[in-house]
Image 1 (cartoon, rainbow, N blue to C red):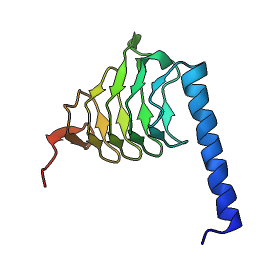
Image 2: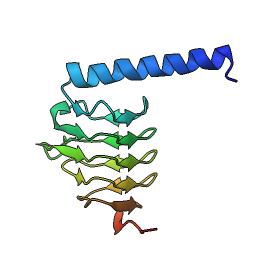
Image 3: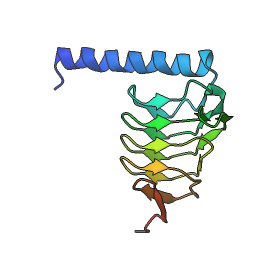
Image 4: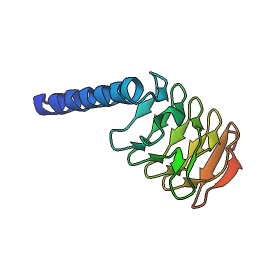
Length: 134
């Protein structure tokens, strides 16, 4: 049975996540589906917030970085993450990348190119492979 302290901590975490989502979508204008789950420590680009597109039932882990701009080259590109994707902790998605539906980005992977639906990305730079059936 959860303790009173853990229930308060859980409520605080949900409240913080709700406020963060409100700011991301209403103030910055990001396109994030309401059913997407984003950890509070994830860094979603605020330099070009209208370039962020996150699909339904997507899970973004702790300290994930999703970028839509590159200040050194002066580019601003849309970054799209499809439906039912999972981005592991500390993974990085570079500007202009499109991740298809049902994809998985393993922890620490740096996605530098588009991922087709149903694929898995591992490593830095990420190697993209088809998901094993089974």
